Image (tube, rainbow over all chains, first blue to last red; front, side):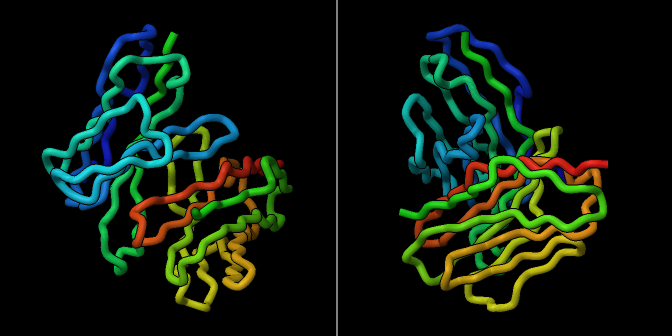
Length: 115
Length: 114
C-alpha cells in the first residue's frame, strides 16, 4: 500500500494563478480531508469529505474548492492564489467507524509559496 | 465549539529523562477521541498515541503514555527515556464523530538534548 500520496511536494505560484493539489489514498477510507499548517497555528481544516460525492467546509475554506468523484481521490483547487495561501498543505484519510478509532493517515505534505 | 489548547510552544529535555507535554480541550460532547501526533523535521505526521473518551484507562505505547483526565478536560503526553529521535513538533488533536471534524492544537516543539 502506498498510503496517502500528495503531489506536488513543492510549488511556487504567482498571485492570481490557479492550481490543483492532488491527493490519493489506496486504503478505501471513507473520510478524506485537507489541512493547512502555518507557524504557530497548528493544522487547520480546509475541507473534508465523508464519501464520494459528499464534501463540506472546514474552518478555513475560503479560496479553496474540492470535489470527491471517487473514493480514492480528493483534489484541492486554488482558484486565484493569494500570498495568504502560502502554507504547507496536508491531505489525510481515515475510516469512519469507531473500531478504527478514527485514526487519520497523512500524506507527506505540499509546501506552497505564492509570490 | 470544540477547542484544543497546547500552552507550551517549546520544551527541551535531556536524553534519557522524562518530559510531559500538556493539552487541554473544551467540548460539550461525552464521547470523543483524542490523539497525539508527532511531526519530525521530515514533515511527516505520525500518530503517537490515541485515547477513546469512554475508556477510563490511560493509553500507553512503549515509552509514550497519556494522563487523561476527562473531568478536567486534560490530555497530557508523557515521554519516558527520551531519545534524540523524539525531537519533533507534537500536536494534540480531538475528534468527535458527530461533527466529522478534527481539531488540532497549535503544537509543542520538543527538543531532546544530548
